[in-house]
Image 1 (cartoon, each protein chain N blue to C red):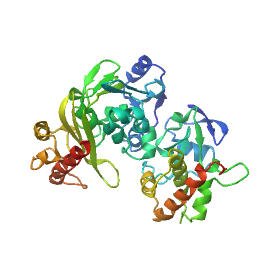
Image 2: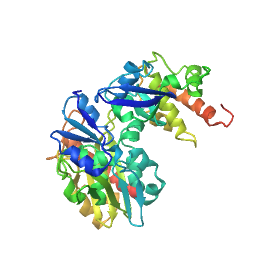
Image 3: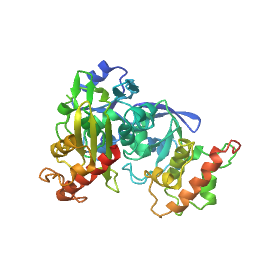
Image 4: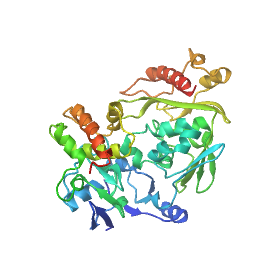
Length: 161
Length: 263
């Protein structure tokens, strides 16, 4: 069976997988990181979004073998080592940007990438369009947009962290 | 998904050899292939990952933009050089799928797959691109051969795509609101390859050029010149999203928007 060596949330892991194993299956079933969710399994809903070498990707539409040598960050790796939440997580909590919470890990990971890749700042409209790869079935978008807008101020402020 | 053998060759020669295996399938970004495998619509013996071949990068000269086959949509959309040389191409790359898809999906994968609603085929055909492969150079006019069908041979790999820089160009698409695929997407261009209009999303045979629109725009490059120019619905798609008649109507509407955007 193919062997995959990758770094997940800063820790190196070597895992045996089948060629057909998806990255999300490796994370959830081999590494026990069940914060990354499987929603639609058809690359539409974004519940499985993680960062691969620093950019957002749908882990249900990536083979585990493609992640060989990559650095992966999941929702579990976003907070600081001492448990301090990432500003995006903090703002999701502050603005009540979730109802059932199923889409939240993917929303947060996609939102962090969206803000990181737009240092010039995002308008409300750009945030809404930037989330086109993430679905929330509780219709919670309004507070999610508010949370991301608030978080971008914290993430781009020089003394924020 | 049925299991398969995974190969990640480090050279074009090794990739070509791997693709010679019966039922081997090349994988670029995997944005179409992985969903296809999940649905068991294809059962390859070997999946040949092309990401180890170094086929990424963008080169812009005075009169052309050349993009490595494994360059992601996100990289094309963000390229300052592409934005300067062919802004319509960068804009097109920026509205493919969603952000996560654009981080993984590639120009070579899109053109090799030739989905009838994909965006890049419209750009390649309207701009008169040249598709360079492991074996030869293919002009866009000879490359697209019907839905999911191209001039590529089974073991032939796209290495880069070269677009002549046009004087004017724009791409507009009427998106399916759920999938974001083009119900109708129109790329208009005026440049070294002439006045060309390529339409994606609408045709049963995939991307096609619109002779009526091209003639009208060659005589008078303006949105108004397209008023009343008909599109036959005989060879257009009809599905739950839109009838052929509706798509024919959209061709004109979207083409006028594209010409207006091109200026």
